[in-house]
Image (cartoon, rainbow, N blue to C red; front, side, top):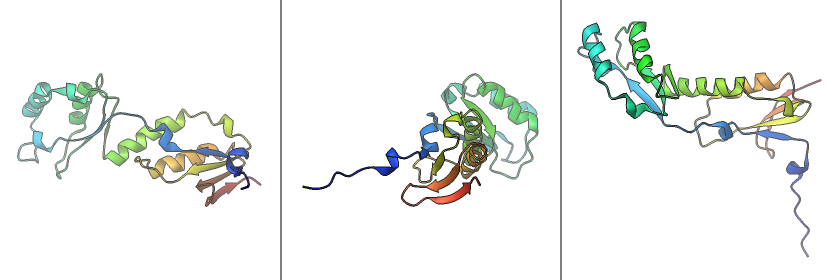
Length: 168
């Protein structure tokens, strides 16, 4: 008769945090404004405002939007502000930058609001591998938030965790 397999990790005091569990649903959209520029380089206010006012913004409902310009054009700040006013009541979040920057801002908010009291004086593993785009910045922010409360912080999986911090 075979001996029963016991999951020692599940029975331990160890807490595992998987940031992928906090990944919010919603499409991510990279919105390039270059097509609204004269020859892709010059912002003409009158024409730009016309593009903004005639755009069908409803397609951005419940999305996360990263605004950017893929050309070397100099874009005045008000142009992004103008677009943001149209997206405010539709998108979940609008930022200026790349999709990676967008994810970083999303996770900054999540981590800032995360209650870490359940990790007080406990060893914690921040899970490493993910299938969703969890930015490295989120791992850093989570580590900083956990350090004052956790007994220790490791990164990876229980079978092969890398030590990050241990309280003396």
